[in-house]
Image (cartoon, rainbow, N blue to C red; front, side, top):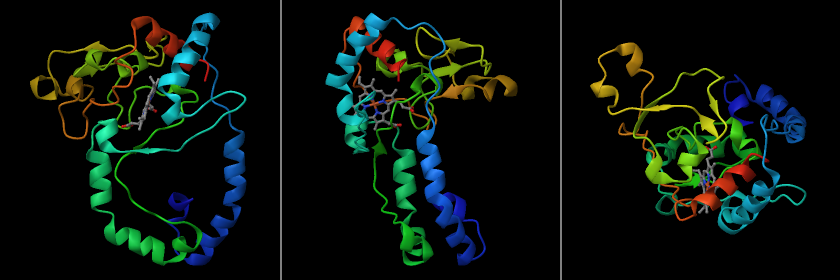
Length: 224
Ligand code: HEC
């Protein structure tokens, strides 16, 4: 709502937009995530549901008939993913936040900047690679096994290059980052996790799973 009213010229227009926003929200709540288009091993997915409930649900919620969403802001010390977006955004928020809260917007909502990242709902997660807030991890399999994440990688950007086994994009790990690439065309397609803001560390909650439990969780995630 804030994003769609911030660029209006006067309060009356912002108020008019705000009045129809409950309808937009109600519509958004009717939208379902797209179903996974490939085969799912139902038995493996059922095993994965149990691993998910024990290891992931506390942050990411529950799905299916009795869905719950904790809407948790996870501290940077706990999540450990690249801090730049969170710390930089809250660092510069001061005056903007006061302006927002003290004017029209403060009548209908409130901004309270805090450092950390929200654990997102995972509906349709198969379709939204690459992962983490900065898109630094090409597949769910790599997200759940942090030592396997590529430091430098590239992909075709063709939608046909989906990777159903690892749930994400087919990609090619490279032995060099943008600095070591002479061709400008190739360079701009290199995801270089050593660049500021592009780090791929943290979210190590899948690392301790056995390979079979991890495969089961991945199968379960296909059903969300
Ligand atoms: C302590 C809380 C916590 C636990 C436990 C946890 N996660 Fe997360 N998860 C997060 C947060 C916070 C993010 C967002 C981090 C970011 O973007 O920097 C996230 C991101 C993700 C993403 C990427 C979402 C996206 O849109 O890019 C996936 C997939 C995911 N988690 C799956 C899992 C699975 C599967 C488990 C269990 C093995 C798990 N998580 C356990 C907090 C948690």
